[in-house]
Image (cartoon, rainbow, N blue to C red; front, side):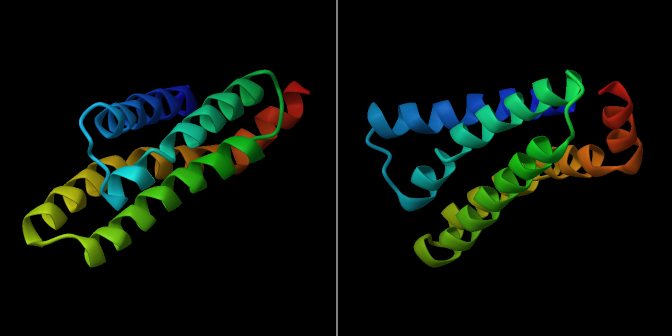
Length: 121
């Protein structure tokens, strides 16, 4: 279930950044990178559905790590591209956003999750 929540929230936030880019002209590099959360969201939802149907947790784990990677790269780009005030905003966003995909990856890769998936097959 955590994969669905993580994927849904990632999709919502990424869609907001996409709308800001299309409608509001918000085209800074960090916003553009955070739009990459859309494929991560789709992968998280796909991986969660596969896990619930008895497949192994590899896809869910991989897409959760990809979501963490997008957030880390966005933070690193913000270090170079933004001034202090904007950097603080990105840092707060990343600190609030990164725990959910990290927890999704950790719980997906736990031995009991993999055992459960193997037994469900």
